[in-house]
Length: 163
Length: 431
Image (tube, rainbow over all chains, first blue to last red; front, side):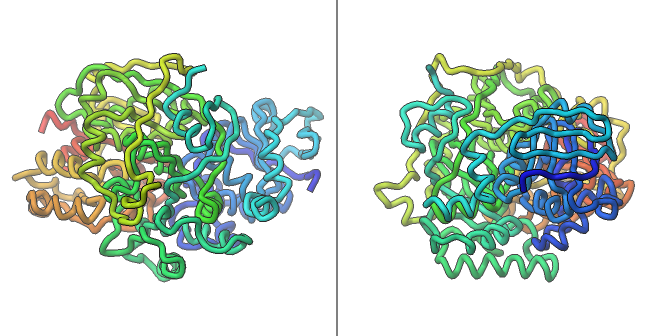
């Protein structure tokens, strides 16, 4: 997956894991079941509007709160191809890399991109292009070790290949 | 260049003489923790690994605390996965109904974490053990799986913020008020990716329970960990809570002997705050973020429907004591539902012996078996649309305790107990 293309679903600051996937659904760990309730408490229509490949753009501290890996699992299963945010909460950041959900920190993109914009993202260069507005942004690159985890498809694959 | 307390613990566990903020390291782990929600996902992942089994059956703790006694069939199926894994791998520290407690109250009580340890847990409040002078942090299920298999985890070495606590607390002010005050001051991402290191001459005035509460909520400021220096109170606590896992405590290579790390004098901090504890008021975090803090006197018009006293933040014996002292001989306001949850079986028994449970029941409160239940809107106290709860728990996000249109106000056990008597958020000094 070197590039993705999709419409933006825009969210604000401090989107916590309780709204990404409410704890009342954590009696399941099945991605297909979790995705049905993704973002339910902040946008009940999210899963109906989401087309596979679409992109989430949010403000600061995305994924704060609980360590539940069910949150990035639900987002990935919902069809989102990437999450762009000003900053990510650290456990969500780790979990996304570990399960292979692409995430990009980019304060400039987070500040400017609007709901419904059409984006393309080149993961090789980290360049985010807003086709609707014609602007492009440089996402922050990952440290070398994290890029290796991402390239391996997550932590478990990385350990299987390297230990 | 000097290192912070956290950096020293991480360096020692990575076999390095020095680490710097931002450096990526691989550290050896003294304990890997999971609960009944996060462990099933970790067990699913560990089965994909080429390496069979777990790195050390004594250095894994599996605690069934979120949805037990099982609230529904799906939860029962989840717990069954963990029970079978614990049995198949002969996990020493497996805590199920009857022995379990809320994980972050249970592990220190069982002596499974000590000063100087490096601990990960697939639960965000794993940062609680910073109160013991350990490095401990929350991770997800995949990190837990890798940790169980290899005994290692990767970390980005954090920079640190120093909180200099001075003076002493006024009556009815506790660790909860301190940490809510700090989160209100720096915001829910104020310590993002960083350590929160608590220092100063005010620390000697804080009980271990106060320190557990403060470290517990470091994650609510985005912190990687929240750590206290080790003093006589820490060592006394560790000594009086010997390791429950005999193979760990008797092993010569055991980490279950406290190891004291201190920050270098020239350690670098990205920011420093001084807080005079004597100036703090009972502090309330309004919905829907823990940073929305107000002094209790601003909240006196807020009518409540439910009170929860418990959780990994405030379900310890001193929390129950202050609540019982306030409720003793009085009646809960008609129409207010008060739920008290001792965090572990040992705390439950001590509260029984000291008469606190009798006080609660006589006042009109209910007492539950240990569970995380209501804190995360799981069960045992779910809110309907439009209802309000004052709670000693740690999060007040949208829908956290139930309906998306319900509200959670975070406070200390003293404020929660006082509010039980009036039906409004109440300063404990006034009841």
